[in-house]
Length: 270
Image (cartoon, rainbow, N blue to C red; front, side, top):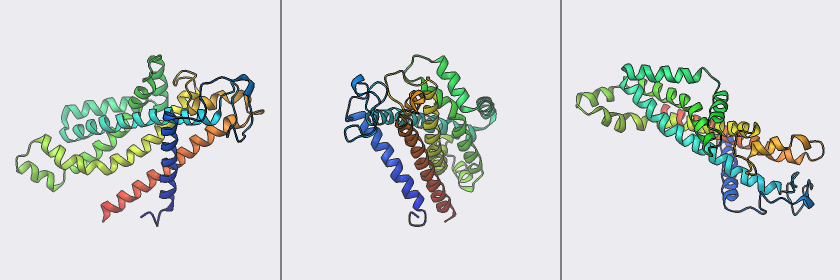
């Protein structure tokens, strides 16, 4: 499969680089990403400062790594919450049906009436001051997408013969759901989770750009991009570094997501 889809390899490599940068940013960076040094203000890229320094004299490369740790962590935690709780809620709703399913569908439709980013901005504003506000806001905003995908998959699967056989054998609903239905939802859940990771990464960058992310001096890619606006003419590297990081990460995630979708589609056909 990888031989026929080299873009999948590119996506994996880029995704691995992003995760590696996040790990490096959480463990150690060449310079303290929050250290202010006005004597090194707005220095261009050099052997000492690979990506130059910002308006506070902070090393841009170190802040890019530190920002990767924050941005990827928020996107990762959001994806984990949405995947676990969204998949469970969607599976239970689709399998049980009845009034519970109608309530879940109504709630999800209510959330989907608003653009995810707008909903996330509103919730982040309400939860202002909490370090987990971006994660909670993004998880709530993107939960309906996972619920709908899993629910539709489960409702289709509920009509299969092996589910009818499980009922004939008088297996409990919980056993049927856990043993037969949930394992068969892994493929769509993984594909959706990959897309969600990209959406959450972009949304976190947008929140940080708008000043709704973690408070300074914590670094995030969106925050770095926002800080660079007043210096683009004199120090373009301040915008180029986080801009390329965000674009490259999204490209890698999308390529990897396309590869996963094609892989599981082919596997299901076989």
